[in-house]
Length: 468
Picture 1: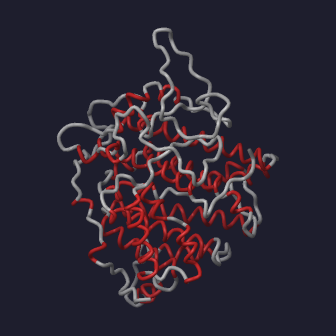
Picture 2: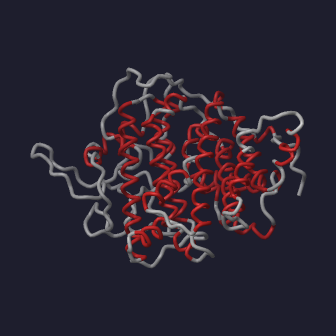
Picture 3: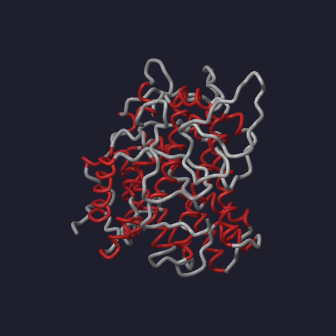
C-alpha cells in the first residue's frame, strides 16, 4: 500500500469546507434569547407524527380526538392501533406533547422562517417535502426487520449516490492513509456498511466532505473497540494503558522536547492510533475549537465506560441493572450525535451546548441508541466467545428472568428512554428556541433514527432472537 505520508497530513482536496464557509444564520450566544416561543409539542416535530404507546388520554368534549396519522412509526403488529405489544412506562408529559403533533411537525420541522434562515430548514431534504398528506419516510425495506414492540421512527432511504461515494472514500482512507486492517478483514469492513450508516444519520450534511468527518471518526472508534477491547485481539487486561495512549491521538500530549518525538512516533504504532490521529486531524480542520474540545471530552467519557466494563470482565462481576445502565451512559454512542452540528456545517455555541438541559438531551439520545445496539447485537454476542454483558443478559441474571422476558423488558427500558429523550428535546426547544438549537435538536433526532435504521437493515451483522 502507498505510504500514508507525514503524520497529520491530509490531501487538500479531501478537506471539508470549514463551518464558517457554509452559509448559515448566526445564532445569538445567549442562554434564553427573547424570541417568540414555539408551539408546544416539539416532540412530534423531531420525526413524522406518531402516536405514543400507552392508554389514550381522555379528550374533553369540545376537543374531538384527531384521527390516527398515516405516518406512525414502523412497528410489529400490535394488539390495538397505536399501542406497542410491549408497552414501556409512559413519560409523564408525552401525551401532552403529542396533542399538537401535526401542527408542531409542520411548524418546527420546516425550520424557522424569515431572512437568513433558509439554510436551517431540514425538512426539504426529505421527500416529499412537508406539509404532505403522507409520511415523508418510506416503509422499511425488505432487508431486516425491526425489533417487535420497539418504539422507533422510520427514515427515508439514505441517498444512494452519497452512500456510494462515502463508502468509496472511507475504504480508500482505511487502506491507503491509515492501513487500518489486514486483507482478511476486508469483508467485515464492507459488511459494516458505514457509508449507509453515516448518510442515514446525517441527512443535513451539506457535502460528502462533511459526512466524511463523522465517517472517519466512527471507523476509528470501532477500530479501537475491536482491536483493544473485543473481536480482534482485544482484552480487558492492560486496557487502561492502551486507551490512555490512544487518547493522546485525540487530545495531544504536551511535553518536553526530549520526549515529544517518541510520543509522535507512537501515534503510528498501531492501526487504532493511526486511525484516531488521522480522523481527528481532519475533524479539527473543519471544527471550531469548542467543537473539537467537546468531542475530546465525550471520547474520554467513552473510554471511561470501556474501562468499567473491562474491570467487571476481569473480576467476573455482573452489575446491578442500574449500574449497567450507568456504565452504558458512558460506553455508548454519545460522541456521534454530539458532533451533528460540525457535520451539518454550523455550530451550536458552547454556552448553549453546555446547558444542563442540552446535556440531558444528548445523554438520553446516547442511552436510547445504545440499548438499540444491545437489542440488535444480542444474538451476535451470545454466539461470541466469552460472557458479554448487555441489558437483556444483566436483566436475566439480576432479576431472575427468562431470556425472553429479559429481552422484552429491555425493549421497555429502551422505549422509556426514547420517550424521555423526545420529551426532553421538546422542553429544551420551548426553553431555548434559537435557530441553531432547534437545528441541533433535529440533527440529534435524525441521528437517533438513522442509527436504528442501520441496525435494523444490517443483516450482515445482526439477527433477532426467536422470541415472538
